[in-house]
Length: 370
Ligand SMILES: Nc1nc2c(ncn2[C@@H]2O[C@H](COP(=O)(O)OP(=O)(O)OP(=O)(O)O)[C@@H](O)[C@H]2O)c(=O)[nH]1
Ligand SMILES: [Mg+2]
Image (tube, rainbow, N blue to C red):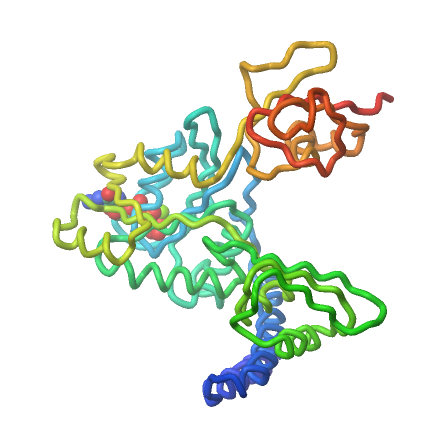
């Protein structure tokens, strides 16, 4: 069966590459791309649900305030890095595929606890299951941040390859989810309301792509200016948008000239040596900063606010997220929350589970008693 999916994928890929890209073919290309995305999803679902082989060694329990996975080709120094910045010692070897499973550790930095997950190296075509690629990429899908660890030699090329493998399993590292809200309706066709002009496709193409996903009647609000691929991402629904950090390791081995060249090609990258410790503090700072964590304070009913031990949550967390962080049953017993601080309209505002908290809020959560 998988070969027929592959054949169909190949066929549409050929059609797309044969079609010239211009205004008059845009609509046709849009529907082809949607068809291609649907086939790829079918293939991916089959890959990720993996009948063959077990996930043993790759079930990582979430811990800490955020999670970072180490993705890289073999021997780039992932295990050396995790052994340096967490208390977990992961086996280091001068040969490829030293690491054979997921190894989680915790980085304690600036009052936060970040889960760092060491993984086996990936190779090209990892997404189709080469090496332990499938399992590695499945772990990557659940992370808050992907740290791509590279060696100085041809770092930019390898970075591109790694990102490509991630994209193939529906990960969109370092990308914002475009704002497209779709409210399905019973009739009336597709009513499109855009805040900015669509520059990547006409409304007709937009509606045509929706049609491919069998959405005939809906009110759609678009706040950004999505490309055809980004719109398909939204309609596919299985895309994840983790943060991305590009790190070049073994900088102790790079000449000044190579380093300068890489800084030009990878302007957002951080240059470290896991071996000598160079820039590891900077790296830790950047991890915490880019995860966009905020501090809030809990106030038990009838007690003073606990300013000693803040609770760390992700930016734009809701009261529901806060409840889940305290105890897994908290949300189901929730009555209301009382909140003071930056997100409150006034002191002691009563709010529900949907309320979005802000850095510095003081929160009391009232639960049902049994
Ligand atoms: N010179 C130098 N060598 C390093 C550095 N970091 C790691 N190494 C060496 O690179 C080799 C591979 O290191 P590992 O940490 O095992 O690499 P890995 O990415 O975990 O490898 P796999 O698990 O096989 O994918 C070892 O010989 C390390 O000592 C560094 O910053 N500088
Ligand atoms: Mg390793």
